[in-house]
Length: 69
Image (cartoon, rainbow, N blue to C red):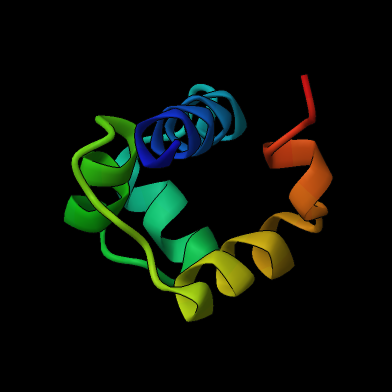
């Protein structure tokens, strides 16, 4: 289950970043470029605080990142 959630979050962030560089996305998200990169590569667990920050900065809901399938 954890791997599936990491995969969904990583894919969502890649799509949200689009053509932005990690430096540009880092500024928008308030999270370091290295952390964002590890999250996209599914190598980084995130805290609830970080997840809340991602949701807030992208103005999305949990259901948009983690849709029920």
